[in-house]
Length: 422
Image (cartoon, rainbow, N blue to C red; front, side, top):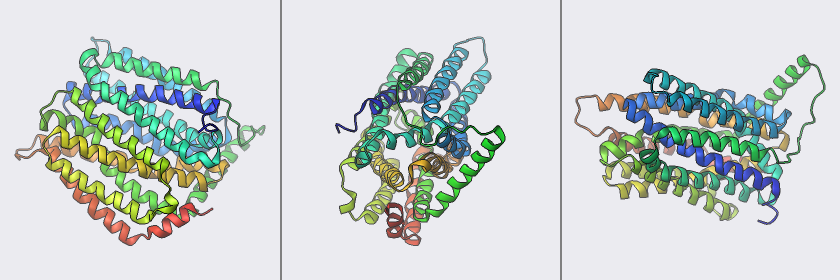
């Protein structure tokens, strides 16, 4: 790991550690604040959806920007702007004279704005990691970054529920804003070589070049048939995972009968599982594994975990199921990211990751919206059923059937062979 932990890599890594910890504190405070003030899964879903739409629509544009402009400037500006927007929204929420409608509107606009920043930020970071790490340690670099994200989630969400009860949402929102500004300051000192030299052409030619570069990114992704099959499966999987942030607050309070701080502990278990998955993905030698059977087993096992989660009625079983589910997600994420980084040419990394973020995340707002509305309907229905329990069990059955059909129809041997060939 000596060559991997160079100055530039560490500066990027530490900035992400701080900002992501603040983000996860913010996320748990956000869903608890909305539940406390509205008790509406639909409104909660709407605000969460607002952050995903820009990432889906603008990620290809953000990816193209990261290939033709300074990736360092994109990363720094995205973090600083995010921090300032969060602090401004925090001031609005702290004004007692404002109505709940105005405050919800402010949160919606903030969520939308953060999604726009993410659409430019994420492809740039994904493209920078291969530049700052040795090629032979790229798998370890991805695992470290993904593990850092989950470590931040463990810290942020593990104590987020407790801090929400003790300190309130306003202070947690402010801490998140400050963490983004700190991250942007740290990233200012990173030296990142720009693959494509700055263009001195006219604005019209720059626009034509930009469109041409974005089209070439789409053509490149379309040519990677095996990878697109894999990402289609992952996109479907995301649809069923998306509603977890909406479902779990109601699961904790209404089904398990626990106080709000326990949501943070449960989400921390989920994050610990993902961290374990990233760690395993970093040390396993996938060239010696029957990768097709291995990935297929992971997908199908997750469906069983959803069913067990729905049947269980205790915090312990919930924690075990979510930790196991997180482990599966962690392994799958590192596998497909590493495959792509090794295959794609460096000058295409930003565009490719932007487009693929769009493909894999397109199902997230659909899942959030449908499940949020469904939960509201079930909560207010005369049927004497536990709505979250019913959704978890139905999710598990649906995942099993859909993924099984996909695995039968799609030759994963071909998918991985195509995605990993040099």
